[in-house]
Image (cartoon, rainbow over all chains, first blue to last red; front, side, top):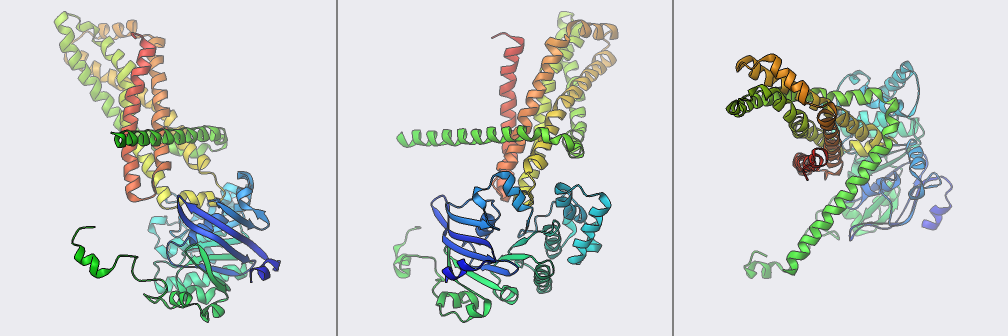
Length: 275
Length: 260
């Protein structure tokens, strides 16, 4: 299967045999992922399996202990700071919390990358910011401060900021977590719309099964630092793997056990000491 | 016993590792300082929040410390009939020691803790990684302007502290206790040297400015990104700055005014 993918010419992000450790703990263990240009690719898996780490590796915020991380033909860990920053200008990222600058207004947050990286005149910056805010439906909220926004609005502003420089790809870290159903619907629509209208490549990291299955073109399921299965949402839904079925249907027990490993229950109760 | 030694060794290693990281951090901040030439607005904003907003505290503290010095100094000097020297005593103790040292300690509590908490919370809320992902260097955008603001503000605040302290001393000495105004000011003028006393005091406050702001900004940068992490880092800023300032003050005093 991976041989097949290797031949695909339109891969924007390529991870090969990526290993990442934190101390002695193995976070990613020989991971292969391909993100195809122009598509929405989702990386799913239980909490703490290294999904966000994958995004950080792609963005060059972390370096792998082994393996290849390639974005648009560039070997990310090998880039110097200048090269990395040049690449990052072509990537947008939406953090889980939105990560808006709390001392800047909504307008200034979206204007921030433009002011930092371009020498555009003020009236052009204004037009661009209003266009980006209009795209996420928050042109009317430009004067608000981040503390005055709801969680969903903050994420939409973060999306507007992520597309400010018209990037080639955008990464979403848990975009739906903790949002009400209407906001989830709005964010889903926006991700799809931005991807198609701006010709972006989107990478979503999430554990919200229903939501991402509805908008993804391709999905990777990871667990314990390994890719368990991948395919388009329909194929994955018919997967024979009991683990995949457990994850997608949200069952409490299955191959991923409900209980943290422990000694025998009866023996434990009779042992009588605190430990 | 061995376990005890091992623990001391481990703590020492941790300490030196952290010191090394702090030093590298300082070098990186200093390295990007030249890039601030075009960032006038950014620096002014920080000087306002670090320096200008500390002025009230420093002014009131300076004035009251000067008044207390006037009162205590008079009571001691009057026994020897030397109360005319009050101006000199007040000015020298403020300019050489109390101005720079107390300003640095107050600065750590007022501005240093705020810097640490602000930067720490920027980490907690992923604002620093977000900035990095937007290809903006937090060293240039966040750390260096704050560092510069602290280093610029400290000597100015210390000068204000000393000036208001001297006014406070004269208010008590001349205004309340009836020392001759001419004697108070002329003794001060005659005995306070611009290089030996004032310049050395300014050098001290510049050194304290570097150290206090370095500690504050580094602690924020190095805080573990949790609520508890930021609260600990803020405490560390105040405590470490106090130790560093008091320790350095002794060293600098020994170097400048001799006696060792």
